[in-house]
Image (cartoon, rainbow, N blue to C red; front, side, top):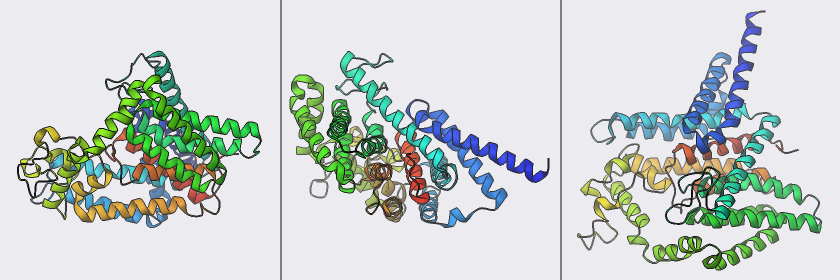
Length: 428
């Protein structure tokens, strides 16, 4: 066997391993974070090695990637452990350097791993299976008091789905759309009364699961995503309206059928909104603003909010300018991140980093939306909405780069970019 044949065979084996890793990633991001990181590393190494061997670097000069590199390099610069730059030391710098893995992962999914229609069909199936798994575990926990692993409701009444902590609604609200919309599209290809009723029942059930979980922001983002989906997919408009009305009825009945849900979604939410500046989320936002005011150009470096949250220099509530006694909750107001991707970008890398990050998000959304109004394929719409929901600026969020949700969002984003680029319907 010649050297060229050995090379082709080796690359084929590596490509197959990368594809298997990609298909397992959504599953790993639910329960096995270390394995998810291993899968990301494998995909990145295979993709970069292939590019180096074959001198195929055109992907690095196209589309969103140059802007992504500009943002990442600025983040790394702001995280350097030098006077006036990164405040978190070497650890902060290493974390900033590691962010590039997500960017290379998305490029690999877009340009190589999910280039062919077969892998895209398989990835769509994995995404659907993950969403169904979370929903099923949630319903079991609601009906029997514990999930299949024996975990009960969380202390405040939230359903945890397949997890031991209240984090089911966030991944489900992202998986919801690429999993649900293709199924609805298939049902409505032949719009008989039976199929319409089935589509309506499936939509209402999916929304009911998110409501019953009892987490406020994922529910609001799910409703927002449903409305955006209905704008693109005309056949879903009546079904979406009906599902939202049924969801409202479920919420109205929740004091009887699910009291913890009513407390979380109505009582507690109303209290927080009435006094938002002094709520935990309002105090986090005020502290992030104080950090940016004092470090407008470079922020505090990666993870700067966590490393600086207990610093009295930033103890400023919303009324601090007229009331210096307003310390924004002091140490008690601290958290590991500011609960908003854009505040995180600003505290990590200043206003230039915020501008670059916002421009990068916009470039992703523009790419995902290109041609979508003219040809609204349900899976493409679902992946666009998942990205929009993940990066919506007016939201309380987890860390943008945490593997359990940020990692999943980057996988869905890479999947969406692959579908948008290659223009082939991933469902038969």
